[in-house]
Image (cartoon, rainbow, N blue to C red; front, side, top):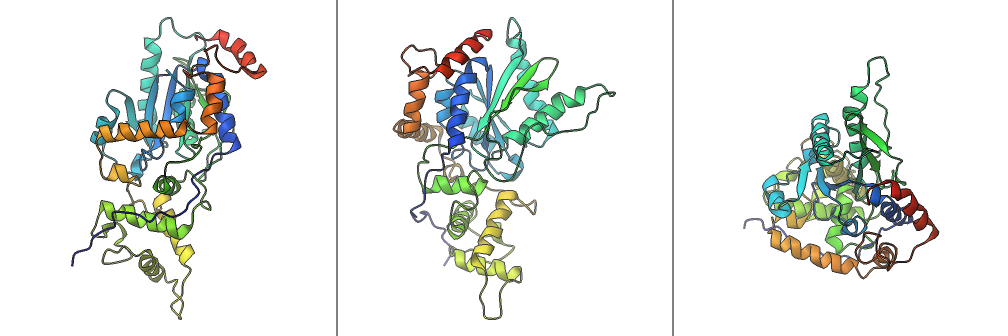
Length: 367
């Protein structure tokens, strides 16, 4: 009998919220800086393009022109043609946050935006990089600055590539929105690096597991065996012959315990009595895919992307997601601060002393 991969994943009772204090602080900061921002760069992980979409951003940065950047393209098999259908006329790029070539492509778009602005912005074109935690925002800022600014400095000036934004393999390295960072001097282009912002709650278990696989939540947040089992589930959906774990087994399986045992055998970690560290093997296998340690593993962790759903289905998912998030306390607080239209220009909002302070600062910028 031929192998049949699972079509449904068990509905474990997972925690669906990982929204923290610095996420709320970042959203508030976004609202203060919004009038100063000419363009938004939203970074999503190309291995989980739907799960790493945060619908809160469309509220707090309403009416802002946006370019979507799909990071970690070297680890993903997401099809550009699928994204063209999903995005329509919206601008998007596939990027590797460490690639100088991709950085030049982004800077080209920013310069084209600058050239369309008349009169030229007296305080420079100001952009903001936003996204879920650990999708590569700070790494991208460092690369953009290195390519667009540091490389243009005179030889007499030290061109040592210093990081202007802290980076790390776990979410939460960036906790505060940065001061403005210069990416280019001619034309004058600047950017705000921001902390990753999680949703108040995610829509279901599979979304949380997808986010855990790409590193948007800490490795200790989800049980390693469940996470490894979900990875096996989505890999089987992509290739039912077991090709994506052929290194450890010569046949496909739906049994995560069988796979982990074979991983332990391959790594010579099975004891004489047949026992092995199952959690250790689960962490090893998941981390191999998360960090792509052997340079060969590429895949998708969103079931909708694997199944290549139509753009009409995606629009319905996003509509339901926006309606779901509207019921949260985080959204209610945003409406109170920004008004119903999300622009902070409505008189029907609760203004604090901090709001009034930034209203005065933002008079320098085009509202």
